[in-house]
Length: 222
Image 1 (tube, rainbow, N blue to C red):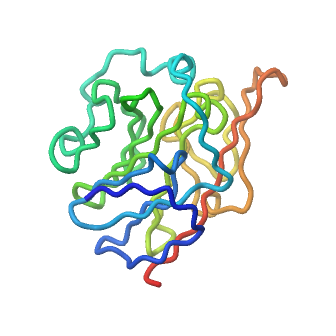
Image 2 (spheres, helix red, strand yellow):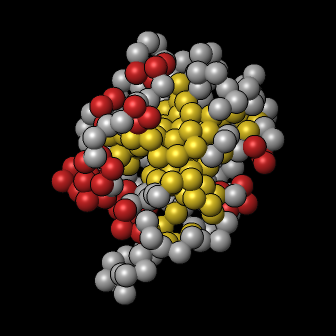
Protein backbone atom coordinates (compact mmCIF):
# COMPACT_ATOMS: atom_id res chain seq x y z
CA UNK A 1 0.00 0.00 0.00
CA UNK A 2 1.23 3.49 -0.80
CA UNK A 3 0.01 6.57 0.97
CA UNK A 4 1.06 10.18 0.40
CA UNK A 5 0.33 13.04 2.73
CA UNK A 6 1.13 16.71 3.06
CA UNK A 7 0.32 16.70 6.76
CA UNK A 8 2.00 19.46 8.76
CA UNK A 9 1.40 17.78 12.11
CA UNK A 10 4.47 17.50 14.28
CA UNK A 11 3.38 14.18 15.80
CA UNK A 12 1.54 11.31 14.19
CA UNK A 13 -0.98 9.35 16.19
CA UNK A 14 -0.77 5.98 14.48
CA UNK A 15 -0.56 2.41 15.61
CA UNK A 16 2.86 0.83 15.26
CA UNK A 17 2.93 -1.44 12.26
CA UNK A 18 3.80 -5.10 12.46
CA UNK A 19 7.37 -4.29 11.47
CA UNK A 20 7.61 -1.25 13.72
CA UNK A 21 8.58 1.15 10.92
CA UNK A 22 6.98 4.43 9.92
CA UNK A 23 8.04 7.10 7.42
CA UNK A 24 8.55 10.25 9.45
CA UNK A 25 10.31 12.74 7.26
CA UNK A 26 11.11 13.71 3.70
CA UNK A 27 12.51 16.75 1.98
CA UNK A 28 9.34 17.34 -0.03
CA UNK A 29 6.50 16.12 2.10
CA UNK A 30 3.92 16.06 -0.67
CA UNK A 31 6.23 13.63 -2.45
CA UNK A 32 7.35 11.54 0.49
CA UNK A 33 5.94 8.07 0.05
CA UNK A 34 6.38 4.52 1.19
CA UNK A 35 5.68 1.16 -0.35
CA UNK A 36 4.75 -1.86 1.74
CA UNK A 37 2.49 -4.84 1.32
CA UNK A 38 -0.01 -3.99 4.04
CA UNK A 39 0.96 -1.29 6.54
CA UNK A 40 -0.18 2.36 6.30
CA UNK A 41 2.53 5.00 6.23
CA UNK A 42 2.43 8.51 7.64
CA UNK A 43 4.88 11.17 6.46
CA UNK A 44 5.88 14.14 8.59
CA UNK A 45 7.87 17.18 7.43
CA UNK A 46 11.40 18.07 8.36
CA UNK A 47 11.46 21.34 10.28
CA UNK A 48 10.73 24.54 8.33
CA UNK A 49 10.31 22.82 4.95
CA UNK A 50 9.27 25.03 2.04
CA UNK A 51 8.48 23.63 -1.39
CA UNK A 52 9.64 25.72 -4.34
CA UNK A 53 9.32 25.62 -8.12
CA UNK A 54 11.22 23.20 -10.31
CA UNK A 55 14.51 24.07 -12.00
CA UNK A 56 15.33 20.98 -14.03
CA UNK A 57 18.36 22.62 -15.67
CA UNK A 58 20.20 22.31 -12.35
CA UNK A 59 19.88 18.51 -12.10
CA UNK A 60 23.19 17.42 -13.57
CA UNK A 61 25.07 20.26 -11.89
CA UNK A 62 23.65 19.19 -8.55
CA UNK A 63 24.28 15.44 -8.93
CA UNK A 64 26.68 14.33 -11.65
CA UNK A 65 25.83 10.65 -11.13
CA UNK A 66 22.76 11.09 -13.33
CA UNK A 67 25.07 11.71 -16.30
CA UNK A 68 26.94 8.42 -15.85
CA UNK A 69 25.69 5.18 -17.51
CA UNK A 70 23.35 3.06 -15.41
CA UNK A 71 25.10 -0.07 -14.11
CA UNK A 72 23.56 -3.31 -12.87
CA UNK A 73 23.87 -2.21 -9.24
CA UNK A 74 22.06 1.04 -10.07
CA UNK A 75 18.80 -0.73 -10.96
CA UNK A 76 16.09 -0.47 -8.31
CA UNK A 77 14.72 -3.70 -6.75
CA UNK A 78 12.14 -5.44 -8.90
CA UNK A 79 9.20 -4.66 -6.61
CA UNK A 80 9.82 -0.91 -7.00
CA UNK A 81 9.88 -1.09 -10.81
CA UNK A 82 6.76 -3.17 -11.49
CA UNK A 83 3.66 -4.32 -9.65
CA UNK A 84 1.32 -2.78 -7.12
CA UNK A 85 4.16 -1.56 -4.90
CA UNK A 86 6.14 0.11 -7.69
CA UNK A 87 7.22 3.72 -7.42
CA UNK A 88 5.75 4.59 -10.81
CA UNK A 89 6.54 8.28 -10.25
CA UNK A 90 10.24 7.51 -10.80
CA UNK A 91 12.13 7.30 -14.06
CA UNK A 92 13.52 3.79 -13.57
CA UNK A 93 16.37 4.39 -16.00
CA UNK A 94 17.66 7.28 -13.90
CA UNK A 95 18.25 5.33 -10.67
CA UNK A 96 21.79 5.22 -9.29
CA UNK A 97 23.03 3.17 -6.34
CA UNK A 98 24.36 5.47 -3.62
CA UNK A 99 25.43 3.12 -0.83
CA UNK A 100 24.60 0.45 1.72
CA UNK A 101 24.77 0.96 5.46
CA UNK A 102 23.76 -2.55 6.57
CA UNK A 103 20.33 -1.51 7.90
CA UNK A 104 19.36 -0.14 4.48
CA UNK A 105 20.37 0.33 0.85
CA UNK A 106 20.07 3.70 -0.87
CA UNK A 107 19.43 4.88 -4.43
CA UNK A 108 19.01 8.26 -6.07
CA UNK A 109 16.61 8.72 -8.98
CA UNK A 110 14.70 11.35 -10.90
CA UNK A 111 10.94 11.43 -10.90
CA UNK A 112 8.90 12.09 -14.03
CA UNK A 113 8.95 15.86 -13.43
CA UNK A 114 12.70 16.15 -12.86
CA UNK A 115 12.82 16.17 -9.08
CA UNK A 116 15.79 14.52 -7.37
CA UNK A 117 14.74 11.63 -5.16
CA UNK A 118 16.29 9.48 -2.46
CA UNK A 119 15.00 5.90 -2.21
CA UNK A 120 15.64 3.88 0.95
CA UNK A 121 15.11 0.11 1.17
CA UNK A 122 15.53 -1.27 4.73
CA UNK A 123 17.21 -4.67 4.80
CA UNK A 124 15.21 -6.06 7.72
CA UNK A 125 11.81 -5.82 6.04
CA UNK A 126 10.66 -7.66 2.93
CA UNK A 127 9.34 -5.43 0.14
CA UNK A 128 9.41 -2.17 2.08
CA UNK A 129 10.79 1.05 0.66
CA UNK A 130 10.40 4.79 1.08
CA UNK A 131 11.32 7.76 -1.05
CA UNK A 132 11.56 11.51 -0.75
CA UNK A 133 11.95 14.03 -3.59
CA UNK A 134 13.09 17.63 -3.87
CA UNK A 135 13.17 20.20 -6.64
CA UNK A 136 16.74 20.67 -7.95
CA UNK A 137 16.94 24.22 -6.62
CA UNK A 138 15.77 23.01 -3.19
CA UNK A 139 18.21 20.11 -3.38
CA UNK A 140 21.06 22.57 -3.86
CA UNK A 141 20.13 24.30 -0.59
CA UNK A 142 19.11 21.36 1.60
CA UNK A 143 19.95 18.12 -0.19
CA UNK A 144 17.20 15.53 0.04
CA UNK A 145 16.57 13.67 3.26
CA UNK A 146 14.47 10.77 4.36
CA UNK A 147 13.85 9.30 7.80
CA UNK A 148 12.14 6.05 8.74
CA UNK A 149 11.27 5.86 12.40
CA UNK A 150 11.16 2.71 14.51
CA UNK A 151 9.24 2.01 17.69
CA UNK A 152 12.70 1.41 19.16
CA UNK A 153 14.22 4.85 18.37
CA UNK A 154 17.79 3.57 18.14
CA UNK A 155 16.72 1.49 15.12
CA UNK A 156 15.45 4.52 13.17
CA UNK A 157 17.01 5.11 9.76
CA UNK A 158 17.95 8.53 8.40
CA UNK A 159 19.85 9.59 5.31
CA UNK A 160 20.78 12.75 3.43
CA UNK A 161 21.72 12.87 -0.24
CA UNK A 162 23.84 16.01 -0.60
CA UNK A 163 24.77 18.11 -3.65
CA UNK A 164 28.07 17.34 -5.36
CA UNK A 165 29.37 20.79 -4.48
CA UNK A 166 29.76 19.79 -0.83
CA UNK A 167 30.86 16.18 -1.40
CA UNK A 168 34.41 16.98 -0.25
CA UNK A 169 33.36 18.95 2.79
CA UNK A 170 34.57 17.95 6.24
CA UNK A 171 32.20 15.38 7.70
CA UNK A 172 30.01 17.07 10.33
CA UNK A 173 29.88 15.69 13.85
CA UNK A 174 27.12 13.12 14.23
CA UNK A 175 27.32 11.87 10.64
CA UNK A 176 28.99 9.01 8.78
CA UNK A 177 29.37 8.47 5.05
CA UNK A 178 27.84 5.59 3.11
CA UNK A 179 28.78 7.03 -0.29
CA UNK A 180 30.41 10.09 -1.82
CA UNK A 181 27.26 12.15 -1.44
CA UNK A 182 25.28 10.08 1.07
CA UNK A 183 25.42 11.05 4.74
CA UNK A 184 23.93 9.00 7.57
CA UNK A 185 23.13 10.80 10.84
CA UNK A 186 23.17 9.28 14.27
CA UNK A 187 19.73 9.05 15.88
CA UNK A 188 20.63 11.98 18.14
CA UNK A 189 21.56 14.10 15.12
CA UNK A 190 18.48 13.06 13.16
CA UNK A 191 16.17 14.32 15.91
CA UNK A 192 18.31 17.26 17.05
CA UNK A 193 16.75 20.65 17.79
CA UNK A 194 19.03 22.45 15.33
CA UNK A 195 19.99 21.90 11.70
CA UNK A 196 23.52 20.95 10.64
CA UNK A 197 25.31 23.06 8.01
CA UNK A 198 27.92 21.73 5.59
CA UNK A 199 30.12 23.83 3.30
CA UNK A 200 32.50 23.11 0.45
CA UNK A 201 36.14 23.52 1.54
CA UNK A 202 36.82 25.48 -1.66
CA UNK A 203 33.81 27.79 -1.41
CA UNK A 204 35.56 30.60 0.51
CA UNK A 205 32.20 32.19 1.16
CA UNK A 206 31.27 32.22 -2.55
CA UNK A 207 28.45 29.71 -2.16
CA UNK A 208 25.95 29.12 0.59
CA UNK A 209 26.32 26.11 2.89
CA UNK A 210 23.88 23.23 2.60
CA UNK A 211 21.45 22.98 5.52
CA UNK A 212 20.77 19.44 6.72
CA UNK A 213 17.47 19.78 8.54
CA UNK A 214 16.48 17.52 11.38
CA UNK A 215 13.07 15.89 11.60
CA UNK A 216 10.35 15.98 14.18
CA UNK A 217 9.82 12.77 16.14
CA UNK A 218 6.89 10.43 15.70
CA UNK A 219 4.82 8.90 18.47
CA UNK A 220 3.94 5.22 18.08
CA UNK A 221 0.79 3.63 19.41
CA UNK A 222 -1.03 6.71 20.71
